[in-house]
Amino acid sequence: MSPSIDFDKVWLQSLSCDSITARSIEATVLRIDKLHPVISGNKWFKLKYHLEDAVGKGFETIASFGGAYSNHLSATAFACKEAGLKSIGIIRGERMIELSHTLQQAEADGMQLIFVTRNDFKDIENIKMRFAQPNWYWVNTGGYSPLGAKGASEIFNWIDETYTHILCATGTGTMMAGLIKAAKDHQTIIGINSMKNETLINDVKNLLDEDELRKRYSLLHDYHFGGFAKHPPALIDFMKKLWKEHQLPTDIIYTSKLLFAVFDLIKKDHFPKKSKLMIIHSGGLQGNLSLPINTLPF
Image 1 (cartoon, rainbow, N blue to C red):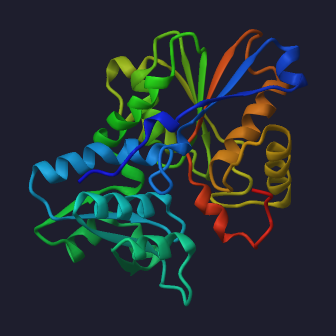
Image 2 (image 1 turned 180 degrees about the vertical axis):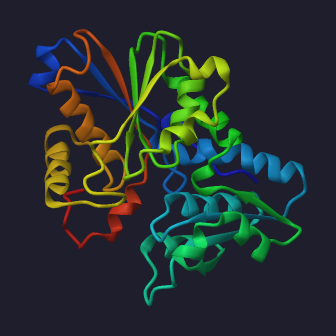
């Protein structure tokens, strides 16, 4: 049984403000975060071909990796439960007294959690040798693989060739690679790096073939707000303002930084006049559950 994904819930949300209007720019948010309450945003796209491959090859268990706030792991747990598969989550860091909301969700959906030290987590191949069982199908962090990028390329089903720039947040670079694969030659893919990792572009390139490597794309590193999952007051204030002015909910890890970058780049005339922007809302709102109650108005 496959998860019930409702593609009819995907919609396009237009953004408008003085800086956008003054430059005759169109800015649209692709709300794939509405696909599913747990397997939201890009998570389903990056998982679907892994699930299909695992079932087709007769595996009984999917094992993957992530941190305490990994949307990927909670999505994997739910998707496996729906597909009749068992799931294993290899978690970076020691088990905490109280699990994060994300890991609580994953565990409630049947995922067995295995905690490893941060140092051990750096050697994924060693982890596989230590814990692997014959019926385990391994999925990399964030679904990073050619199969993950293949699935992510299908996000382009909602993006026509009139869009000049497609922008997305990046973690592992899987979604960005998928968007590059599907883009037309005249379109530019822009990734907004959510962490201090300026070598991430190499991971993106490793999922592209020679023709795709020649397409138009860039990865920007100036909008991580101090590092992965960092959310200083300035970012929280921006999220509140974004909700007040556009009724657009974002998460503290990925989409808030993406939208901040979009508005900043527009003000800095990064895009030519009359550009048409598509901004991918990749979901992950459950990451906000780590904030104190009532921090955000949504």
